[in-house]
Length: 114
Length: 113
Image (tube, rainbow over all chains, first blue to last red; front, top):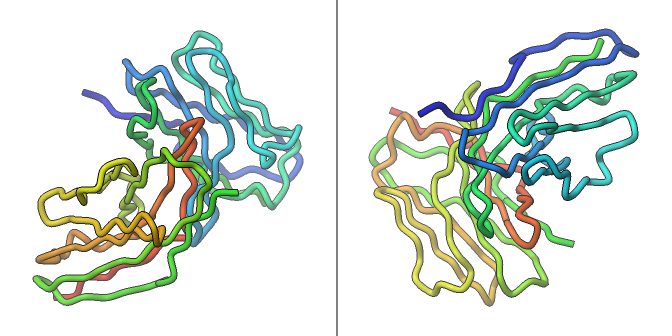
């Protein structure tokens, strides 16, 4: 039984570059969530999918951020023209579709923008 | 707007003793869920315990239990017989319509031997 996996685990990039992160949810989970966590803070919701449909986006998700889940399985989160303020841990979680099912988290991708 | 407040940035406890972490929240919903997640150093976040708002009985999971006071919008976590492996950041989270979670800022718990 594999949990939620994320790749890469760490990413260092220069300001202005584009980066893409991948999340593979637990296989039977059709809901997938992205959160951002800055140092010493709790995670903040970014967006979530049910199957391939993106159902909600936070105002934190500026137009430089885009998330996809093309086949309803894995998801990607892309950040274009990265800024130093984008440095954070990006967490992915998945759950079953019922109301308020427990979300299971991946290990996260830590992004550092120089 | 939904908010979650954890007023204790750091706490410490001796091994085998009991510790209580505090959490208050605000929501206008009548149907919601509350969670405590644990995030050990450099490791992923795992669920400790969850509570459905419509249930009056407090949830328990082995050494972990909650004190859910719905009218006061309070949701504290009690850890009994603390172990070194309980050392972690603990997050209180509120889940409601749309299933997104709103997290508090966290409490760092250090268990000392």
